[in-house]
Length: 98
Image 1: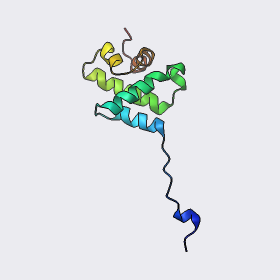
Image 2 (image 1 turned 180 degrees about the vertical axis):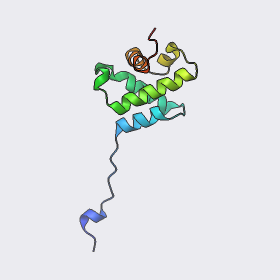
Image 3 (image 1 turned 45 degrees about the horizontal axis):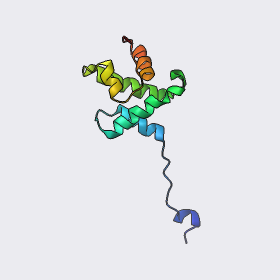
Image 4 (image 1 turned 135 degrees about the vertical axis):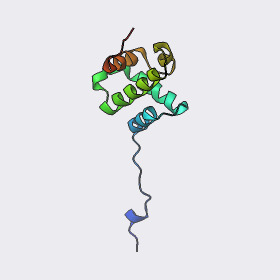
């Protein structure tokens, strides 16, 4: 005989921040990555140090990948990031903010 708890379907916890990080860490370009970039770029109301460390790592990783593929700062902004997020990530990477 099953109890009521056993009959219920298991609940899956969805972490939207983890989805954003996974999309940014991914090497594949697409709509999901662009949406993740825009979401990360929209978080400019919070100071960079207050963003979750995993998100900051994902942003730096993605921006480093874009820079390694010879993208300019303007192209990175066109990819969906805000100027303040790009500037801070470039500083963290030791790159020019110009």
